[in-house]
Length: 281
Image 1: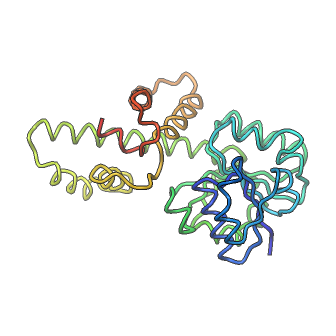
Image 2 (image 1 turned 30 degrees about the horizontal axis):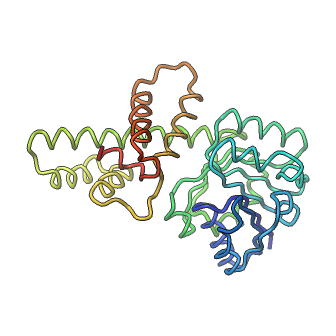
Image 3 (image 1 turned 135 degrees about the horizontal axis):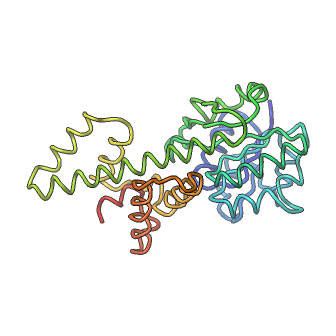
């Protein structure tokens, strides 16, 4: 059985750790704030001093940090992931990072012959906690086949998009569309409210048609804010900015408008609110 390393044990990383432990894997962990790892250590994870240490002890390494800055901090440097890597390790970035950083990371790994996958996730907090994440994958398809059985404890589905960098490209497109959809539902509900319609009846009907995962999530959380939240306004705004950069100069008025709405929410002190809270402003 392969040994697992997880660098970054926030909501998503912690879920990955717990589900591997439940399946009998040895798991090594590192987190910037080691004090937040106590519960994982109690469950059987081994806390190490640096990302490099985690890589040296593990066969499959997941990096699950927040953004380009935190990601580059754990990959680079004398104590980083790359410093402990060799060609026998499977290196995975499951953070939602920019296309530019994902491509640079893939280039550095390829130059050293290290197997690398950009493998961002969807499924949110609940998916992480239940082991039902969906991995969106870029990397060597033949090498990916070697990971198939070892992804099962944490993921119910893996979708392959192509060479390294393809997974994060899709993740940014996905989050872009979901955010636009959530904001669109908010406009519909505000219009219905102004017209004096029964918001509950309107929302319930929209959950049936057009329905779908995002409509149902946005309507459910409009009625009752999730506690704990699923995804913060701060982090969806970061993802949307990465999507805007990915699109370069392409005119995207819907995306630009939604970014503006989320930035206003942050400026209003709602950065840590659930991403659906934009519809209650």
